[in-house]
Amino acid sequence: MIAPHPLRPGQILSVVAPSGPFDVEAFHRGIAFLRERYEVRYDESITTRHGFLAGDDGRRLAELRNALADDSHALIAVRGGYGATRLLPDLGVEEIAAANKPLVGFSDVTALHAAWARAGVGSWHAPMVAWLGNADGDAKQQWTDALEGAPTTFDGLVPIHESRAVQGHLVGGNLAVLAALAGTPHAPPLDDAVLLLEEVGEAPYRIDRMLTTLRQAGWFDRVAGVLFGQLHQCEGRYDTTAEEVVRAHFRDTSCSAWLGAPVGHGPENTAVPLGARVEIEGRCARVRTEPGTRVP
Image (tube, rainbow, N blue to C red; front, side, top):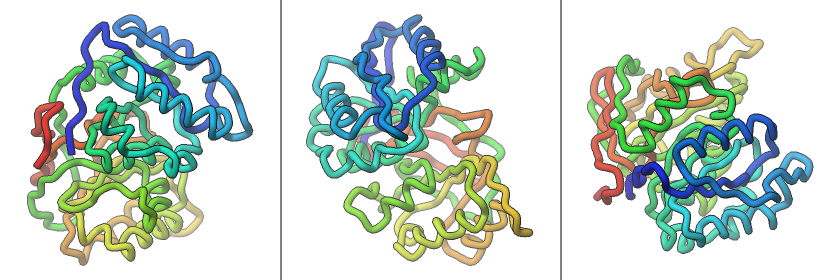
């Protein structure tokens, strides 16, 4: 695994829409923000709508491939939604490895982060163009600082049990997308990884189903630890919370797990480098690896 290369002012960003359609006004506001610091390119077909997709599979796949092959320095998605998993069978990890460009996004883009991880290329679990179009100044500054190489530290994590200190390369993202990849050839590399999981809008029983899928697929036996981001708007009609579901899955296991990372679909969505080395001890997580260096 390789931690993502940091951006530099003036570099070229290729904007892509590999998943769902988006709010065009928020898109243009996000593009305006990015153009204050970077050169930004996108194809005019990016605003195409095809039902719940930002254009058909052929349009979205061609856009990704063109962005990998051009002279840009990084790819940034417009938004999530759904659709990235449909592209995985035709998107070769060889293309991603040869381009060696970081990808920026979260939510449904988790499927592509898994492909980047399998290619050994770092990526950014971070807000996307439409999100940035609606963000305040502090959120935009954190995004810029992180992607340009500022260190990442989380304090105030909550160990689910007496978790031991762990370290490993950071992989993961959205729980529902990762559960959909379990048992397929498109799952991310897990051995000695720290698995990041976040979710939005799923009832506790559905979170239980997803965690059960990952557990029965052996994911929690392979990773060094699990770091939970936000479980945003995950209420349900039964007398059980999403946090209680998570605690029940890890309370009696040997897999160390923590709650409380400010990552995901909630108001605070800290940009974090996937592929980078992370150390978690007590209530603190620190990304230790220098961006752009190979993780053993």
